[in-house]
Length: 159
Image 1 (spheres, rainbow, N blue to C red):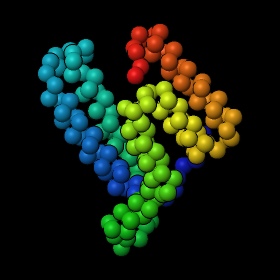
Image 2 (tube, rainbow, N blue to C red):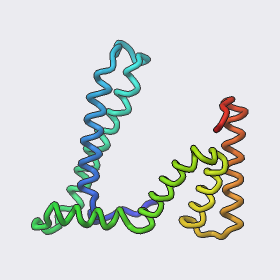
Image 3 (cartoon, helix red, strand yellow):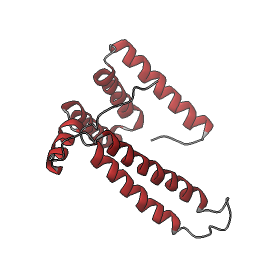
């Protein structure tokens, strides 16, 4: 069971408001999908899922506001943004973003399996830190599962 957080974390208010704004935009776009005549029409599922996103976003905004009531009112937006950037863009996050970009570049040069193997192995080594044998084992199992699922279940040829 998760422990309830009693304070508003860095960037939480801004992220929640951004999440609500994007959800509202997606709800508007989903409403524009034609043929909302029945529950099984093409626009029903997007409208339902984005509606859930908006309701959840509203709940999160009010929940965050209630948890932040005791905070000092003089804390500026710039302070919130600075705290959020410092919290979200730690060195491990930035290095992983670089690793993702390198993985995307490697896909076109050495193919899916080799680039994915290197990416997964390095990711497990950096983030999981359980040793070379475990990282290699999980990498092999993961790539094997992806290969079997896509090759035999979906009949998709991987690059």
